[in-house]
Length: 90
Image (tube, rainbow, N blue to C red):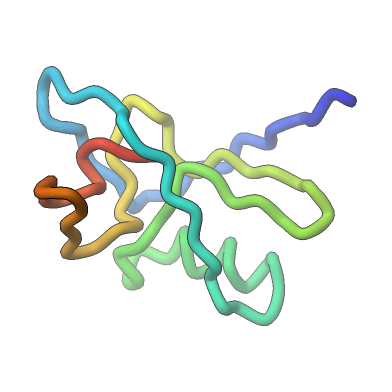
């Protein structure tokens, strides 16, 4: 099966620190009632939150932030001594 990834960009991102490599994949449950509600929230400039991908229960995938950039999904974060997981994750 081939899945088409839809390109719709969120304004909520910035550049990764130079030389940073992706080391983690973080999967979130948004808690939103619908896929469309989650999409709107991740693209709302006022929310200051985003993700690289939004995946629906039906398998629909939207790419919101290019992987070369840093999405704002992990917030203030730390795991195994690494701070700011947004730097190293998608």
